[in-house]
Image (cartoon, rainbow, N blue to C red; front, side):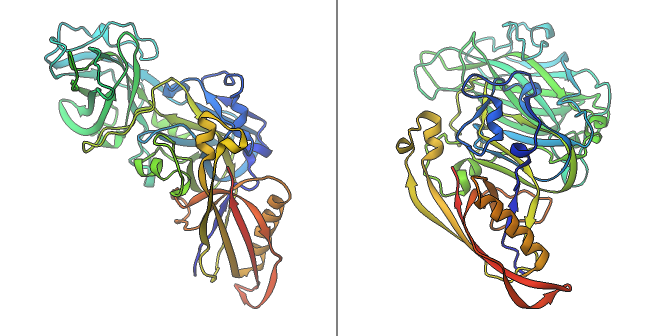
Length: 475
C-alpha cells in the first residue's frame, strides 16, 4: 500500500460552522485585524491577539453543537522558533482553564553576585511588574538566583501516552536589559533550569534579554511535570542564571522584575476531550515556511502547524499559544528575535475532518514549484507582502485502486472546493494518524478534478475507482 495523500479540514468548520471565535483574553482585535479574520479563507488577512501573556493568548472556537474534528491547523502565524502551540477541545459547553493557578515564588534559596534582594521584589505576576528588580551587584558580572514556590492546590498535570512529556507547565518572567549598548546585536542572556528540592532536573534553555529598562519583556520557559519526582509539585524550584553580553561602554546586563509558575492541574487536563499537547515550533520549520520552498525574508514565520488527530467530537476548541517573540539561543546560534511587541497575529485557523486515501497503489503525488509571486503586484505591503512573496507549489495526484466509498468521498470534497474558493490542507507524505506532519503540508485549492473511473476488481468487497486532480497552493 502507498498512502501518499491526506486532505484535512474540508469543509473547514472554523469558517463554515463556527458560531463564535473569540480571544481568550477578551477583545476582538484592532480595527483592520479583527479576530474574525481567522475564519476566512484568506491567510494574509490576519487577526491580532493583543497579548502574548500565556493566560490570555489564545483563540476559542464555539461550533454551537458537537462536530467531528480530526485536523487542527494554524496558518500564517507570527510566532518564532521556540514558540509552542496546543489545541484542546470539549464536547460540552465549558473548556478547562488555560492555567489552573498562577503560583508566585515564596522564598529566595540562593544567590550569586546579587545585590540586596527580597522575595517581595520579584513575586508579583509578570503581567503586573512593579519595576523593583533583582540584578547583579556590579551590573557587569554574571549573577544567579534560585527560588522556590508554594505547593500547588492540586497535582500538576502530566500527560499520558504520547503526551507524557508535554510541557503543560511553564515559568514566566518579566525582565529588563540594563546598560544601554551601542551595538545592534548586543544582547544579554538568561538561562532557566528546573530544580526540585535543591536537585537539578532539567535545563529549560537560554533566551535573549533585549529590551532596555524601564521597558520590559516577557520570557516563557515551558517544562513538563514528568521531570519531577514529587507528584504534588511541593518541591519545585527555579534557577535563573544571567550573563551580560558584549557591548560598550558597559555590557548589556539582565535584570529580573517578576516571576510566576503557570500551573495546570491534572484534573483540568483530564477534563479535555481533545488534546494535542504542546508542540514546539522548531527553527527548521521557521526556515521552511510554507513547506520548504518559500522565497522569504529572514523573519518570515512558519506558516502551518498541523495535527492529525483521532476523530474527536467537540463543541468548543481552544488554541493556546506560548510565544515571547524571542526564541532560544542554542549551540552558539542566534535566532534573530522578533521584537517582543506584546501581540500575536494569526492568518487562518482550520478545524475539520480528514480524508486518507486507503489502499491507494498509485505512485506518490508530484510537487512542483511555479514562478514566485510578488506581493506588490497585488497591492500588498508590509507583513502581507512577506506572506505573498513565495514560490507557489502545485501538485498532480493520480489515485488508482481506491475503494468506491473513499473515492466518492474525496471527489465530493474536491468538487465542493472547485465550485468556490475553499482552501484546504494537503499532506503528500503523511505520518500515521495521531502524529504531527508539517513541512510536507500546504494550503491548496482545486485547479482541476477529473471524474471517477471504474476499475476491474474489488478491495474488501468494494468496487475500485480511480481519479486524478490538480492542486495549486493558495496564498
